[in-house]
Length: 634
Image (cartoon, rainbow, N blue to C red):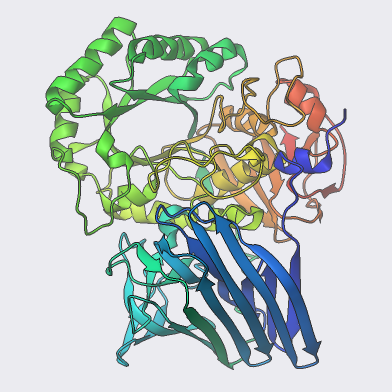
C-alpha cells in the first residue's frame, strides 16, 4: 500500500485541526480549536494566543469537545460563540464562550461550571505574547491592586515568574502601535482574580505566557458544582504602523557548523547496535545510564561496541541515585566503564532527584552540592571532560545552574511538546532556540556549551508522573511517542533547529536519537507506526537523511539563508540544504542550482527504504512542498 500524504508528512492519518481566519478592518486573528491565535493589528503580531484550558492536579490537559459553533459577522464586527466540555476520569466541566471582535479590539469571554467537584492546578485563560521583537522590550503592568509598574519583558530567559498580580499588560508590538491586554477572572480561592507571567522560552515555547491563578497561592484548588466562574480577556489597540521593515537584505553571517551527534537510551541500545552499520557517522553518541539499572554493565558494553562501530566519541549521561556518597557512586560508575572497556570523552553526572522539575523558589531535594558532585566526577574520570547540566531540559538547567568553575562544559537538551502539540506550535519552538542559547552563555561563565540530545518528543517527563501513552497516534503535548518523528516534519524541523543555533557558538549539537520514539532508524518493535509496520528491510525515517547530511559537514563554514518566509536554508562550500518549514509550497531560490535531491511525499517510500538514498537520488524542480527538504550536492 502506498503511503498517504498525511503519514508521509506527519506520521499519522489523524487529521489536524481546521483553522479559520477572521479580518475586521486592521484586526486579524485565527480560530484554532476554540483558541484565538496570532492576533495582528495593521499586520503586526500583538498576541500569539489566547486559550481556555482545564488542567487536572497532575497538569494533564484533557482535550475539550466543542459544540454549537456559530459565527455572526458584518463589515465591522464578528461574533463567535460555542460551548465546550471536558469529560475525563477526574473531571466533568463545561463552559460557554463568546468572542467579539471589531476593528478596535477583541473580547474573549468564558463562563464555566463544574458538574462534579474536581481538583485543578489551573482552569482558565492563558495568554501568549510573542518573543521576536518583544524580548527585552518595555511593558506597562497594571497590578490587581491598581498600581502601575514600568518594566520589561525579560531579555535573557527568566527561571522564575517575571511579573506577578497582573490585571493588564500594555506593550508596543511595532513602532507607533500600542496593545493593552486586560485580564479578569472569578476564582474560588482568590477574590482578586490574579494573573501572573512565566517565561515560556524555558520550554522553547516561542512566547511569554500569562496565566490565571498564581503559583504562589495554594494549588491544586477545588472547583465545586453549583457555581459559575466568569473569565474575560479584552484586547484594545491604539495607533497604527506600516510594519517594522524587512531585514531580508541583511548579509548572512558565516559560522562553523557544530559537531553533530545522536542520542541512545538504554532500552534502545540493542536495536541501535543491530543497525550499527547504518548509523550516520556522527561525531558523538550521547548515551544514557541509570547507575542502579539492573543491566547497567551490559548497556555499557553495547555503548562501547556502538562507539567502535561508528567511530563516534561517547558523552556519558550518568543518572546518580545518590543512595551513597557521590564519590562512591561515581567510583562505581568508573569501575563499570572500565569493566566494559568504555572510556567516555565527556561525563555528565546528574542526581536522579533533579529529573523532576522544581519551582525556582524550591523546596529543592536534599542532595549534595553540584560542585562537589562535579569535582568527584573529575576524580573518578580523570581523562574525561566534565559537563554540568540537567538530564531533563533547559528549564531545569535554568533553575539549577551548575557552578561554572567546577565544569568544562555546560549542557542541556530541549523538547518541543511540553505545552502544546499542534504542528504550528511545535515548529514555532525554533524561534526560541537562539534566545535559549544566549541565556545559557549568559550564565556559563565562558565555558563550552553543548546542546542535546534534543528532539521533537520527550524522553521523560519532569512535570508529571510519566509520559502520556499515544495509542491513537495523535499529536499532543507530553506524548510518549510523537508520530511526526517518522514523517517529513522531523526532517524539516531538524534543519530549522540547526539553522536556529548556527550563530550561537555551540560546540556540539546532539539532535535526535539513533533508535526508538526519538530515533532516525525505524525499530519494528515500535507501535503504532503506520506504513512502517510489517515492512521488511532496513527502514529509516526521513530525518535520517538530514542527520547523515549534517554528519559529513561538521566544522565547516556555513551561512543561514531565508527564502519566501517559510523556507530556511544552510549553505556550505560542500553543498546546501533547504527546508520548507511551512504548510504551503514555495518556489526554490533561483540561485539554488546543481545536483539536487528532494525529500518529499513523492520520494518518501524510496528514502525510507534505502539508508543510502541520498547518495544516488537526483532530480530537478523549481518548488519545495510543505515540510519537504532539498539537498544540493557539492
